[in-house]
Amino acid sequence: QSVLTQPPSMSAAPGQKVTISCSGSTSDIGDNYVSWYQHLPGTVPKLVIYDNDKRPSGIPDRFSGSKSGTSATLVITGLQTGDEADYYCGTWNSRLSAGVFGGGTKLTVL
Amino acid sequence: EVQLVESGGGFVQPGGSLRLSCAASGFTFTNYWMHWFRQAPGKGLVWVSRIKGDGSATNYADSVKGRFTISRDNTKNTLYLQMNSLRAEDSAVYYCARDLHIVATDYWGQGTLVTVSS
Image (cartoon, rainbow over all chains, first blue to last red; front, side, top):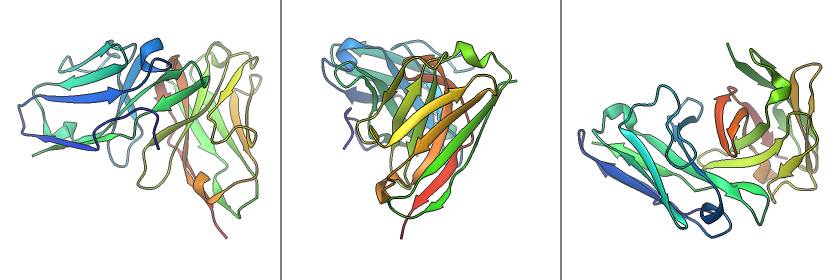
């Protein structure tokens, strides 16, 4: 069972916006920066957001992140079929002294 | 060009051991924390362990603490994961990754498959 809670699946049409939530606790999200990964089948996970709201080089500004209290959110606007993937949130848990991740959200772009 | 290449995966019986390696190139290895992640078939991404650039600090997920040991040889630019007392639930693709910040990582290896089964 994952420490962080994400919706198992979400779907939206091309061009639309999707908001993926990630819920944690005061020991993890509430106390540390959050990252988001995109994982397409057959590839390695790809960082799309780090430090709550920063985009690595090469990630389009259609991807944005935010954090409030013990929850974090990944927003993808202008959805494309290539965005169809599993998305994971992760952070550090200060009490466990360990990295913790959500169970992943399978995004379908129909 | 940053490259991370894992090796050492394979098939092992429960209770057995394996040592994974991750050969790094294209960057100053000693300057970076390094991580191991894993993903079991059909399951989510899981953080396993991390080690500081000089090897002086390590952290582990509770699920592997006491059984797995992360280490590095900075003279060989290589990261290791010694896995002992393996269980069926340790079966997964194991990835090494270079730290960007906390659990944010910017480069990943291609992964190596570990299968624990009798």
